[in-house]
Image (tube, rainbow, N blue to C red; front, side, top):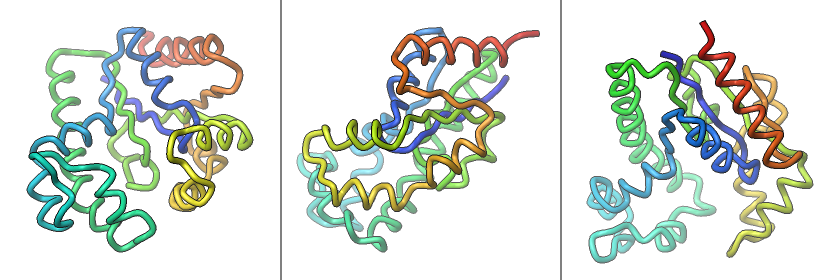
Length: 194
């Protein structure tokens, strides 16, 4: 079985691309979805213990948690140390389940693949990219996003150029959905032939 790591900086179209892999029948583990699930279950008491007042009605309130950690490097690092191992464990279970089933290819959608030393967990890496002006336009059109927030997020991410250099596959999402879909199909074909 091949484990493909799918990553890309904010606003590059990674979630849409992950959906394209799923549409082609490739199982995808979505790290962001895993975090959402954890924030409604297993992680609630852990987060509340370390960031009091962030859990409401048995769920982590993402807005309150963001207030507690955004712009505070130490708090954000602490949160990541608490949550990343839980997400990793969930992904490991996903991979093992598909390995037992004999699935030929799975995708781990990991936003911070390079930043969290996730490269050792995958066999190949696909990076989703777009020109900087397209990325900026996409991100700043999101509700609640500010120039300042965007710059802080970018500062914590490995630069796009570096990600592309380290990738086995690069998917440019700025050319439209169909070319991206074709790139996804080509990757699947390359990794599952034989």
